[in-house]
Image (cartoon, rainbow, N blue to C red; front, side, top):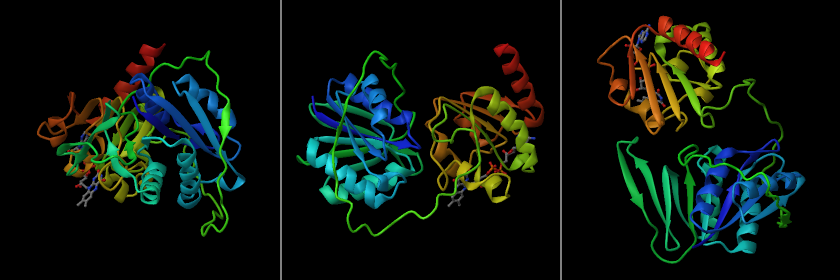
Length: 321
Ligand SMILES: Cc1cc2nc3c(=O)[nH]c(=O)nc-3n(C[C@H](O)[C@H](O)[C@H](O)COP(=O)(O)OP(=O)(O)OC[C@H]3O[C@@H](n4cnc5c(N)ncnc54)[C@H](O)[C@@H]3O)c2cc1C
């Protein structure tokens, strides 16, 4: 059993479910599981953390924490670490986690493994797996010595347990010193998509160069909306201007691990696979039976996406009725 601190990521007053995966995994392993939420007026988010298994929930609240900066959040998390003295610190491998954890690891002299796809606790030690060489190999990681162990874990890699909604939590406040910060957010320009982000979604419908125009992505959006999915894209589709870069999946885009990944007219270049090969179930639709994507697909549909995708959308709609 170890003393574990989970950094619970919230945006706009909503907790990210990937943080609950970590709370659930730590709690299920019998660890003393602490959660910390950082932001402005976030104490109402504490109960959810308890429902997923946190023994104790802390908040670091300040108006300056309304929008994320690495500098201010690192100060807040380091203050929490000093108060709680955990042996293990976990966070999600999201844009925020990727930025924050190395900063904090440097400040507390912690050991850090990033982008992990599996974690276990053995006698107070973390045992992790993480992909390397664009996912061509998986390394097993354990930390030497007795310092603080830190890891970021890919969202959806562990899976979400069921919350116990009868549980409540009082958030304990931790204060941090934010004097002399060198960075400040002047403006936040938000994307206008109402769909979930590809890294968060349980289902991702992705399209490639073969879509031919930005307008043709409408057929993928229809399928995505029917399934409650996010829309992703290959780099070729993004470079051609069919989708914004935030939707790009792959080595130079986002890494996703959804329950279901539907690749429509995507060849399966190694750089694309690097971003989606840990998806639980992969469906590939492609006219070319030799397309490399079929080597990792669980289900292969050899056909024209312009016929297959609308047919799939109709079928899902019928099943839902
Ligand atoms: C350093 C570097 C980083 C990169 N990073 C990324 C990255 O992050 N993400 C990424 O995706 N790529 C990345 N790439 C690019 C990658 O190598 C490929 O060029 C790209 O993934 C190809 O995109 P695509 O599959 O959409 O296009 P293509 O390779 O052109 O494949 C199109 C596929 O659609 C099929 N097709 C055509 N018409 C139809 C139809 N009507 N119905 C069904 N199937 C059809 C074809 O058979 C083909 O398999 C990177 C490359 C480099 C060098």
